[in-house]
Image (cartoon, rainbow, N blue to C red; front, side, top):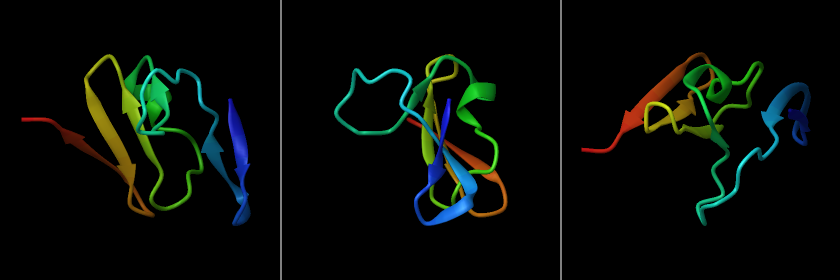
Length: 67
């Protein structure tokens, strides 16, 4: 479910689970799946369940929702 971050082998980045968009952002079914463990700073994911984009700022996951 995760790949090793090519820039830091102690961190993980999510494998692409669903790719039906052109953004390149990994899409997950739930918010919990979208907030991957040990992400690299700047990792972005999308949750279908809540229609939110999750962005990891280096210390915590932040969310963005469309208006």
